[in-house]
Length: 168
Image (tube, rainbow, N blue to C red; front, side, top):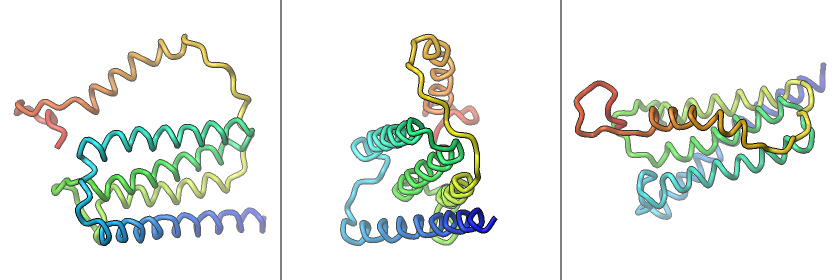
C-alpha cells in the first residue's frame, strides 16, 4: 500500500511539474522570439501536430512492445498528447476561446489530462498483449470511419450561414 501511494504521489508531482515547465518554456520562447508565426500558419500548424502525433505513436508502440502494463500505456498517451495539446493551444489565435488565469480552457483541460495520465500510470493492471503483425483488413474497416471523422472535424464551409458550418 505504501509503495502504491508513493507511485500516485510521484505521478501527481510529475503531473504538476511538467505543465509548469512547459509554461516556463513557452514564456521563454515568447520573450526570446516574439515574432514566431502563430500555430495556425502553414509551417508551424498542422505539420508540427502531425509530426508530434507520429512521435507519440512511436513512443507508445515502443512502450507497448516491452509488455508494459496497460495503465502505463494509457497514462503515457494522456500525458504526451496533453503536453502536445498544451503547447499547441498556447500559439493558437482564437480570441473567442475562454481564458482563465492567462491560459485558454483547452490548456486547463490538458493539465487535467496530465493528472489523469499520472493516475493511470500509477494503477496496477495487466500487461499489454504482444504486438501482432498488421493486416489490411482492420485498416479497410477503419477507413470509412476515419473519413467520416475527418469530414466532421476538419471540413469548413466559410460561405455558409448554417450553424456549426465554420470551424472558427
